[in-house]
Amino acid sequence: MKKRIAGILISILALSALSGCGKEKDISYVDEPATTSDAATASVLHRNYEVTDGLLTFTVDADVDTSLSAQSSPVVKVSRNDYTKDDMKRIADAIFDAGSYALFLPYVLRPDEEVKSACADMQEKIAQYNDSADIPYSLLQEYYIAQQCMENDNVVTPIHTDGSLKWYRFTSSENTDIYTNFCVIKGTISQKPYYLSFIQTDVYCTMLLHTIYEPYIQYPQYYDTYANPLYENESYSDECQYSKEESKAMVLDTLQTMGISDYTITDVQKAQTIKPDYEITKDGEIIASDSSNDGYSYDSYLLYGGRNVDGIAPVHTDFNFSRELVSGTIGENSSSNDSYTNARYGYEAIFANVGNDGINYLVIQNPMKVEEVLETNAQLLSFDQIDAIAKDYISKFDGTTLPFSADNTYKIKEIQYGLIRLFDEESDSYMYIPAWYYMIDGESLSSPFCTFSPYVIISAIDGSIYHDYNGNIN
Image 1 (cartoon, rainbow, N blue to C red):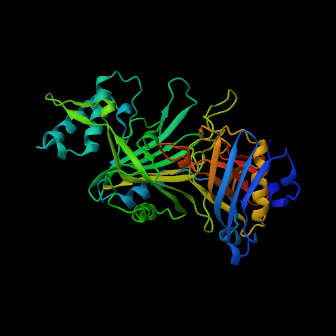
Image 2 (image 1 turned 120 degrees about the horizontal axis):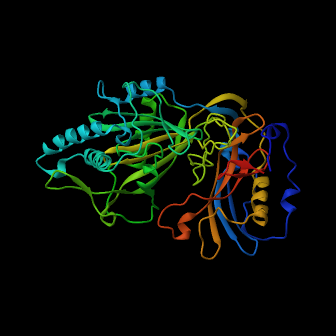
Image 3 (image 1 turned 60 degrees about the vertical axis):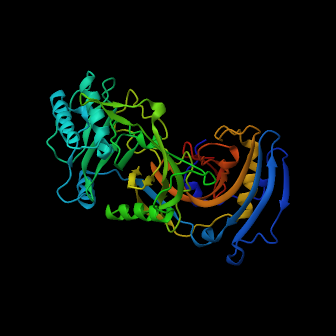
């Protein structure tokens, strides 16, 4: 059911009846605070109760800090703000060593003779190292990818460039209406090789600063598989030389250098990283190791963040960092640009991996800009009203978006205040509004990697239920 964003600003629902609707539920209150006032003198509340519908059971045991909701409740209208060729030049000038960068065309899009020449150049560089352990990993990886392109028949039509920094287009061979715009720049930062990639389609726009070569420019996936977040209670031999705060400062400083200052880091997690090993043969060729021998390390952090509006940002969940909400498919009677700003457009977010060598990658995804501040201090529901909706929601929730639990029991240890992004089809606009996130304790599910799943996300303005997997409310 579609709900217009304008309705959020026009009226505030009378929610006293909502807590009693639906079927009867078994709600067991273990402990309630002496006061549930949201005043500054009692800004930290404690919620401890269990709610079940007979199939799913949620145990809530969380401290809730309502001070931020009392101080800040902005509502802003935002729009898609894709990178331009001027942005590419400005950012490259800002972060790369002077005179070190140039346009870099992925090998899969180069003519065969250029790939062969590049392989010869890299083979010569590799031969200059007496000890193979000293060969930069990025050089080995890039040489391996180029070698694969040279050995395999390349069915992609080569792209010819003039060396300028601008959008270049890769078009699907099966459907010319489906395209990817891209621009990849290679240079050094403090003498360390980096790639700066810009990627744009109908449904997302992304900038990536990365040390790992990305061969599939039209489907950038490496940052989804290169690192996985871990729980802190696990003991690992490797340690990052940087602290969480130092890693956070490193990312924010890099963003500042790029001229980007409207984001904040909201979550930092220990990470497991994996990189394939490469071996130089006697003939000078390079081969990748069997995947079972790939090297795992535990000496880095994953960092997550989003747009900061008056001290509030989206809370990190598994869905609200999605690059695109629905696969971009062009209809028979529409052009590839008809859906430039639509409900399929993915979420705005930043995420990064920082290790002993500094930033391994930094992703700024689906940038937006604030068009208008609609409310600086919107009227909010009390947290008691929000909590009543959360208790009632289980009667309408099927649990399909939750991580697996053997006994269908989930613990809620964090209830956080943050932003959600809405899309209104009628006005063709986006909006950030405040909401409450009831986050499931993934550690209790015995998952090897962190999960960031909400039981429910509730609009702080009108009590609507927000679905982060598709960006809709009802």
